[in-house]
Amino acid sequence: MSETTLAILASSIGSQILVRLKGGRELRGKLKSYDQHLNIVLEDAEELKQNGEPKKHGLILIRGDSIVLISPVSK
Image (cartoon, rainbow, N blue to C red):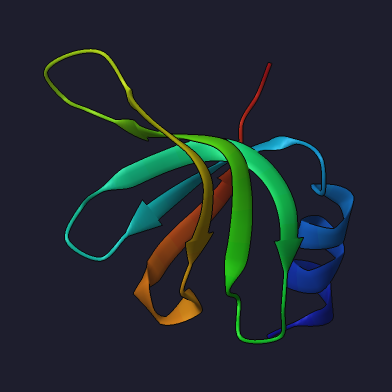
């Protein structure tokens, strides 16, 4: 993982991020922590659905090997 990626993740702690997973699922939540394997913990996480209201999950851990994309959410 590049230093730029780590710097962006470090500056995003406590901020809303969007995570796209293998298989097309998307989750949004507040980045609580991450590690060198890109495993991340999201607070107040919700799964974004194409056809309706987001599904609330609360606190979740996402394995780094299932992540395709991580993006800050613009406010």
